[in-house]
Structure formats: structure tokens, C-alpha cells
Length: 489
Ligand code: ADP
Image (tube, rainbow, N blue to C red; front, side):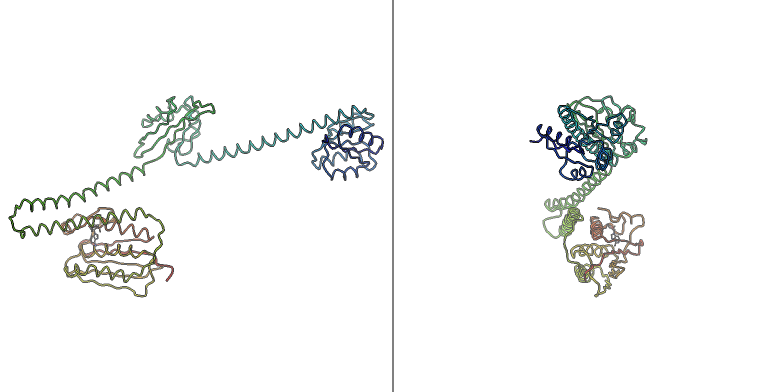
């Protein structure tokens, strides 16, 4: 194996061949160049480890050649060999970046010694370069990791506070500053007990003061907001606790939804219990035969029981619809856009008996050439069943129910109007809430569970539509549903 490649540039044949012989015997591969031009040509070829340059060359001088080598940023060790060694040339050569200086005449041992030193230097130099590169790369990685972590913590919506072993704040993100209504930079180095001095933070302070390795989770209240706090210890590589990280998340919305849900369930239970109670009492009367042995006197009661059970069945159906809409959410289910007129007619047909019984007049105006609506047929049917059903239920005997469909900038507008009891202005904002029913004497005996409009509203929302209501107490109401038309005809 060769020790290294050496180029010797000298116009003196004796020097060139001497160097060549001595170094080749030592295991080096040597090339010779007589002039600067030859040297540059040789340097274009396979790389050299060392170049030995005579100070004086026929076509140029050694310093110019050195300058060219340095300019080309070659990974090569340079040594000047010259008989004209004086202090000025040495200084000039060092300035040009020469690595070594070997005055002529030199002994074979001098030459071998210098070549070996240069080769060692080169190896060290390369090692140093590699270390530098690795160091730079790791610094870069560290910097980008640091800035990533920083921007991550900064943009977190949860408030984060990092406290060291001495209980001092070492990091607070902007959300933490906002929560404490303080500049986050001003929190640094302060004792955590001082930063979290407000009374509601007492359990957090206690958890931060603990030396245990346990993760603590707690809920606190600040004003009318609820927060969940988690205090987690963090460790050194050896496993010792270095401090704690407290994250504080606003759970007010989650709490509000949970409360709403439990209210819903309470109302639902009540809605189940009251018809069941009524039916049970009726059955008790019948079983006790308190109105005699014949069936006749009980018939009105049994009729009533049947109505309450019908109401219960309807309630179950409505609850199932609500939960189906909730579960399906905004999931895109493929459906055929629907043609409105046949659905409206079908629903009106459904209510024919009721309309006749109440002596109502039904006015329908539907444009038969209307494009399809971008809603599943079942959803449009449910909307119409509820709206037309209400227009009949909350109407006066002999009143009118109107159903009109018209086109309006890429949407269809479906109006369901009645001449009934109307809705009080203050109740209009609640009309689509679950279980909401107006309490007034005119409509007191009308059966219902307050879920129909809630279902309609959710279906309209899911179809990216809109529902509006206009009502005059004592005169009637109009519900207008705006639904997107299908793009395809
Ligand atoms: P339900 O009819 O079963 O009570 P809805 O959700 O359909 O439930 O309606 C909620 C409430 O809105 C009704 O109880 C009633 O007070 C009022 N309402 C709905 N539609 C009309 C209407 N067309 N005219 C007057 N009041 C109405």
C-alpha cells in the first residue's frame, strides 16, 4: 500500500530524481514536474497529498504556483524547497499558506522526516475538518430543534409553566402570560409560588412543591372558567427530578357541553316518565274497576292512554333521529338530490285526515320545473313532516296552511305558513332548542315533545342551508327553509 502521493516541482533534474528515488523507496508514489505549467497539469490529475515546490522555476516562481494551489482550495500539503532560503522568502511563503520550508541542500533523512510530518499534519488536518463539520451539523440540528420546540411551546393554546428544582419559573409560554395577565418574560426566575399566588392555584402550588415522581391532575376554577391542570415531573438522563411542567387547559367548553348533555338527559327522563305515569294510573283505574264492570266508561281513558303511548313512540323516534344526525355528523354520505314537489305532496297526503278533521284549507304552489335540491329525500321529508305537521297542529280550526316553493339565487326557498296561534316574540330565539315548547293556554292541550324543530334545524344545518321564522302572535307563523340546489340537473 502506498503511503501517499507526492509531486516534486523543480527544474533541477538531480533534485527531482533524488527526491523521487528516496521517497519511492519509502513507499510513496512520486511524480515529477520541471516547470510551473507541468505542475499545474499534473495537479489536474489524480490528487496528491504533498507538493514540494522549488522557489525558482523557469516559467514562474514557486510562490505564484502556491497561490494558484491555495486558490483552487486543494486538500494538499505544501513544502517549499529552495537554496535561496532567507527570512523574507520564508515570510512571503508562509503568507501564501505554505505548510513547511525545507532549505537546500537536504539529506534523505530530512526529506523523509519532512514528508512524514506533512502527511501526519494532513491526517490531523482532515480529522479536524471532519470534527468541525460534525460539530457544525450538530449545532445546526440543535438550533433547529430548539427553535422548533420553542415555536411549538409558544403556539400552544394550553398554558405551560416549567419550574426548576428550586421552584423557580424557567419557562412560561404566551398562553400562560395571558392566563396570569402578565408578560411571560416577567415570570422568569420568579418563585412559582409567587407567580401562582392567586387562591385558586393552591392545589397547583402544592403539586409543584412535591418532590414525588407522580403526575398530578386537578381541576381549578378561575372566574367563570374551568381549567384542567396537569403537573408532570421531568428528569435528567440519570433519572433525577429536575423540575416540573404544569400545563393548564381551558375545559370550560367541554364542561358546558357535558352540562348541556346532562340537562338534556334529565328532560328526556322526565318526558318518558310523565306519559308512563299517566298510562299506569289509567291502567290502575281499569284494574280496580273503580268505574264499574262494563268497558264503556273506561273507553275515553283508554283512548287517552293510547295517545300518551303514541306520544312516547314519537318521542323515541325523534330521539333516534337526533342521535342519528349527531352520529352521522358532517360525514359525507352519498345521496341522490331530491325533487321537492313529490315529497311535499306526499307529506300533505299523509296529513289529509287531520286537515279534514280540522277543516283546514291547504294552499300549495310548487314550480314543477324546479331543479333538484341537494338534500337526501329522507331529510327533506322529515323537515316537511315537522313543519307542515306544526302548521296543522298550531292552527285554528278552519285556518289555512300554505306551502310555497320558489327559486332564489342557487337556492330553493320553501315556505310553510299557517294562520294559527303564532309564537311570542321572546320565544322565537328558543324555538329550535331541544324540548322547548311554548307555554300558553291556546296550545296547552296540543301534544308534542319539543324535538321536531330541533331536528329540522340540524338537518338544515347539515345541508348547509338556513331556516328562518316569522310569526305574529294570534295571527300565524311562516317557517322559511333555504336549501342549496343540486349542481347537476
Ligand atoms: P312540538 O311541536 O312537538 O312541541 P317542535 O319542536 O316542533 O315541537 O316545536 C316547538 C315549539 O314551537 C312548539 O311546542 C310550539 O310552541 C312552537 N311552534 C312550532 N311550530 C309552530 C307553529 N307553526 N305555530 C305556533 N307555534 C309553533
